[in-house]
Length: 250
Length: 295
Image (cartoon, rainbow over all chains, first blue to last red; front, side):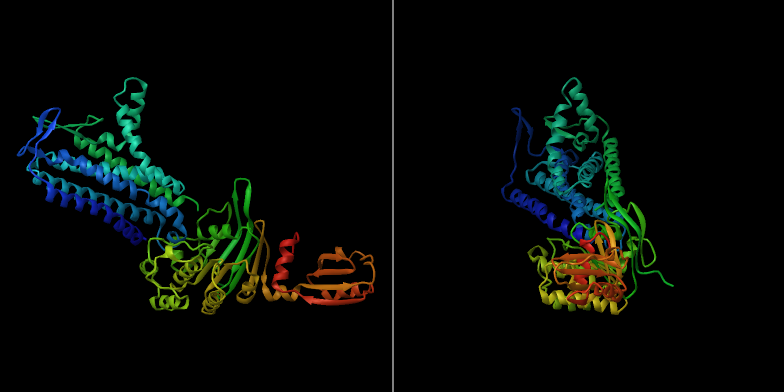
C-alpha cells in the first residue's frame, strides 16, 4: 500500500517543488545585490554574514504548508478501507508506511526550501554562515514541520472526510495562539497552555539589526531542547495515529 | 474433516440498541457458491463488514479457512464491495501494480484476460469510469489474485447484461477450481443461476439457509379454486407443514414445506372445482421468506 501514498506524495510534490524551482529561477534572473532597511536602518547590507540556521524558519514554513496537505493522508484512507484493509498487510503497518512516506516528503521539501534560501543569499550577495547553530536549528526546523504534520494527522485521522479542512484551520489557530501568548492575565495563560502543542511556539522567529540576526521563540529554551521536544511530540502524535487508526470501524 | 472456508457462528452486531445482524450462523463449503439475499437493510453488508474485520462483532465468531481473520487471510481472500472503492487519481494499471506488489498469487496474465473480458483500458484514470466499469475494475483486481475465498457484495451492480453474465461465469469458474464464494445480490435470478446454496436475511436474522435444490423440492404451492366461497379449512392453517394460507375470492393458496401430497389430499376433500400443485422457484421462495414471519 506504500505505493499508493508514494504516488500521491509524488503528485503533490510536483506542485511544491515547481514553486521552489520557479522561485529559484526568478531569483537567478532578477536577483541582485541589495540593502534591506528595517525601521529606517540598514539591517541587511551586501556582504553581511547571515547565519543560514537563522533562516530555518523559512524552510519550516514551506515544509509545514506542505505537511498540512499530506497530513490528512490517513483521513483520506478512511474512505478507501475496502481496498487498503483487504490487503495482506497489517493495518498498523499501512499507517506507518503512509506516515514514513509523508515525513520523508516533508523533510525533502524543507531541504529543498533551504537550498533555495541559500541560493537567494548568494544571489543577493549576502554571506551565508555555516556556524555551530546550523545543525540544531535545521533539526528544530525539520522537527517543527514534522510535528505540524503529526498534529494534522492526529486531529483528522479519526473523523469523516470533512475533517481534512483541519489542516488549513490549524494555521490561523496556531498564529492566534502565538499572538495571545503576550496578553496578560488568564487569556495569555490559556494560550501558553495550548502553545505546549503548538509547533510554531517552538520555532525561532528571526529579527535582524545592525548587530546581526537574533532568535526568539515562545518557549525560551535552548534550541537543542526545543528540537528534542518537537521531535518527541511528533513521535507521540504519530504513535497515537498508528495505534488507533487500525481500530476505527468502517 | 476440514473447516469450511467461510464460517460464521452466532454472529451478532449491535449499534447501540439497534441489532444489525442477529445470531447469524452460516458456512460456505469449498468449491461452493452461496448467494445471500435480503431486502435493503437486512444486514447483508454489515455481515460482510464483520466477516472482513471492518466492524467488530458484538458476539459470535468468524473463521476464514478455519482461522480468525488476520491480514494474512487476505492473501487468499478477495472482496468486491457494493460500490467499487478505487483511488480516483490512479489509473487502472496503477491499481494492478498495487495488487502485483501486494499479493504473492497475483497473476498478470489473468489480469490482462479480465481487462479484455470487461473491455477496460488500463491507461484510464478510475475517476473517469462509469459505475459499471468501476465494478469491472474491482472484479478484475479480485479475480486476478486467484483467491480461494471470494466475498462479493452485489458484484454485478451497474454492469450491462453481458458483463453480468461474465461475472456469474467467473464465480462458477472460480468455484469449479475449488474457491468458496459468498455473494449478495438483489437479483434472485443471478443467485438461482450461479449459487448452489442460498441464505436469506431479514431484519438482521438469517431466515433461510439451504441448498437451493432442497428448497425447491421441499416447498410447493397448492392452488385450489372453489365454486362460490371457500369452505371451512378444518384446521389446515395449523398444520406444521403449511407455511402460509392465502385466500383471494374463491381461490385458496397453501404454501407447504413438506408433505405437499397429504396437504393436497386434505384440500381435495373440501371438493374444489380445480386443484394443482406448483413448484416454487427461488424468487417465490424469497418472496415467501421476506413477506412472511418465518419460513
